[in-house]
Image 1 (spheres, rainbow, N blue to C red):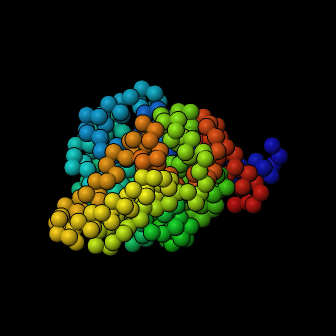
Image 2 (image 1 turned 120 degrees about the vertical axis):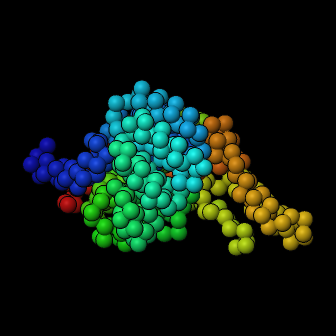
Image 3 (image 1 turned 60 degrees about the horizontal axis):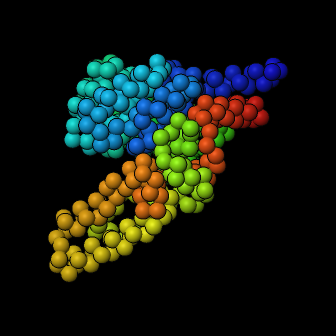
Length: 342
């Protein structure tokens, strides 16, 4: 490597130095927490490859989370985190499990965490990572005690907000410098990582890119659906009536999505006919997707299950090892620095 290339490689390392230090990793690349996908095998593989794996707790009970953490620790001695949903009824017990097993980083998602929860995690010796969809909330979370933030744009898979990654990055990165900020949503190549690092990010989070890895336990049919898909196939769920709000979810368009629209129309018609009350109708709509993600990921039902995917799915064209994916991303980021400078 000539001196020019060596200097630019140092620029990449300098750009994500704060993120690597915060995570305790070689690369400031986090694995997005994907329910049923981000379990022990994938999480350990990401961490072993130099990134930062994150267990998706989702709806796990405390006992199941304890088992998963211990199993992950048996597969890697590298740092990894646990993603907890703030609306989980056993959140405090899940926090206790993380702290008792010396998990170094807890990611709080799915709502605004309470100050008490953040302080409990910090006092227990772990670092707290929070998601923020706005600059104002990000600053509030930092005042409350968050050690780092993730900003995730609407290009991401799963539950999403209304603003794109590039806009969030422009709004938030120049204005928050006191804690590491990681960027997520629609990232599938290292050049994008390099761009956000130049803008001030401490690192990036990717989910969709890791689904079709050898180490991922996702069903072969689930992986094939990813590899066949284009960016435009990853669409958001449709809300039929504002009286019955639907939290937007990005997934591959399939028969299940069409059936969801039909179900909303049927339920709303029953409500208007007086056959269902408002609460029962809302629950019927909310419960439509119950178990649908597991059916897709584990059972391979990609027609009627929920095939959650970000728009970067169009860049996933083959099954690879996590190590190969990670090295591709890092190589692309390095080449970006070499070509354009810091």
